[in-house]
Amino acid sequence: MDYKHPIRDMSAIAMLIVCLQLHCAVVKSGTAFVTSVLNALISTYVKCASSPSVISSSLMGVARRLFDDMPEKDELSWTTIITGYVKNDDLDSAREFFYGSGMCEKMVVAWNAMISGYMHRGLYKEALEMFRKMYLSGMQLDEFTFTSIISVCANAGFFQLGKELHAYILKTEVNPSPDFSLPVNNALITLYWRCGRVDEAREIFNYMPVRDLVSWNAILSAM
Image (cartoon, rainbow, N blue to C red):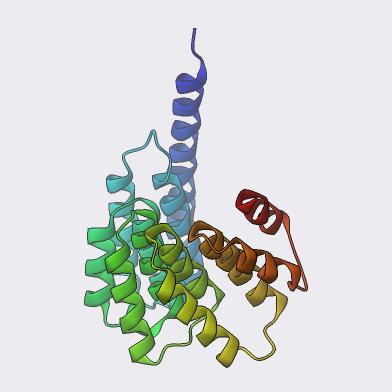
């Protein structure tokens, strides 16, 4: 007997029960109008919606209604909803929320969520167009932005664009922190070896001040 699916289903049901219990507790406590509390509740529904055994659209619907009814919203409120749509593979709703909210276009996390969502769905042209709009808007590009868009170039074989991004990073990020350089360099290694530039991938690896398991896996894949 295959116990995998029943156990997974039971886990999903348990998560749903926790969501409902938490929601009831929030209402009873009188904190249903506190932004931080509502953010936590929305986040719980979003995480529960990510379970493969749960009807994600209905739970995201609850999360969205909670968001819409919030008397005061902060950046976490907005980004939780859009990342929830992306994680639940509902890019249509994510795109509608992004452009219709009037707020997401001011948030780096929201831009990154959209780029990452397109990238993971294999919608590379859409990811590049979102990146172009983000750049032209003057938003600060961070390690998550570059990692996603370099991954797009690696997956789609857009080597020249990836190389131009590499040059741009070297020009603009003079003294990058390890939090920035490590994931970006890992993505660059993958870009170069997938596009047949193994020596250049190895050179990036050799000059990395910090390496992790992803770095080693990337360079070993190039061998």
